[in-house]
Amino acid sequence: MSSKIFDLIQEEADRQKYGLEMIPSENYVSEKILKANGSILTNKYSEGFPGRRYYGGNEVIDKIEVYTVNLAKKLFGVPAAFVQSYSGSPANMAVTMAVCEPGDVVMGLALSSGGHLTHGANLNFSSIFYKAVNYKVGDDWKIDFTELGALAKKHKPKLIWVGTTAYPFKLDYKKFRKIADMVGAALVADCSHITGLIISGAHESPVPYVDIITTTTHKTLRGPRGAMILVTDRGLKKDPEIKGKIERAIIPGIQGGPHNHQTAAIAIALEEASLPSFKKYGVQIAKNAAVLAKELGTVSETHLILLSLTKYGYGLGYQAQYALEEAGITVNKNTIPGEPASPFYPSGVRLGTPALTTRGMKEKDMVKIAGWIKRVLEEIRGLDLPKEQEKRKDFLKEVKIKLHQNQNLKQIKKEVAAFAGKFPVPGIG
Ligand code: DSN
Image (cartoon, rainbow, N blue to C red; front, top):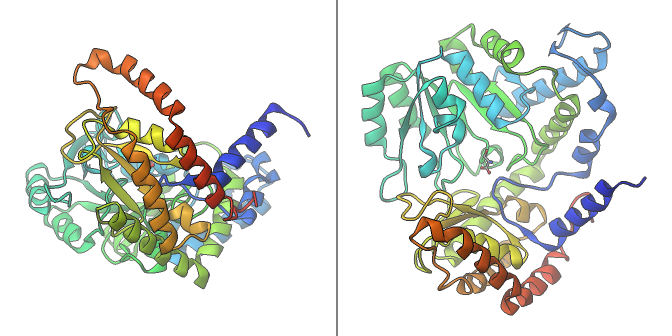
């Protein structure tokens, strides 16, 4: 078999093996998941739900979907599960459509405070078709429940999201429930980032507190790209029609045929997440993040670290991301609460431990990795973002050339590759 694509896949495999993958929403799936995801199940159309399809030939597909749904219900302890959403954003769109009418008020954590696009961010469907109200974090970077309560009282949301993408603290679902009950809102947890931590017991489960849960399957859950929607007993009691509403939102509301290869791979991820070894994995993710955070001078109660770079200079997030990449360490630039620079060229980076933990790295390895990160960050001192917007493009072009030629970064990359290469990656070796 030859194709330019296979050469490029090999190139990417080398990057994944000899680098340190520290984007907190990424992970490495098992060989079994890779096999199911790359299987002949991709050939089949099956709009609809098991026993109710628009196409023939779905006897086996029905069995796969029913098996996956049952695994999800058992693992989370919920009475209903939906596994067809292509990814997190369509799952969140389906839930919003199921719970709200266009124009209803939807509340979620602001993107600038570590929320998600689909929880009411500008330009997203959640603020185009619904009235979005954002709550924020306070000076301590933790959710400001006083503001949240006041906003809920004032705007009477139909739906409140509790979920984050760049928030290093545990979530207090009880407090959210109290506020949702006060205004009669549906409370929906988007656990995408922390599902693996919840299943392993490292974080409290939202199941007793919320009505609906959404989660991507490819982050700490360590499955293929995809998503699930789960309805809790509480949610079903609150709205006995909710299951049908969610189904209609998925199809014909948003999607066409489900990705059956993806559903099958999700089933394998759920099988793996049901094993005792997954509990150890989830707990280790959080232990590793706590050590890494401490070494970098901050804290994490989750799988991720939101690192402010303001002590190194102004608007250094992009420069740090680039310099780290040159050293074989992949992270993403991120705004920090109260961002002093710009959303495009922010003042922080977001990094995490799920993928490193999958490779078997432990606390002592985090100390080593923090050492490399700190050495890299020394190299961006003095590369502050120009305050004048028109100067930024040319400035960053020059910065990239400078960092690409930086001998210290080249040396760190060698050390990182020698270290990372010792830890196997499923599907690569
Ligand atoms: N893109 C995801 C993340 O990286 O957090 C959220 O959708």
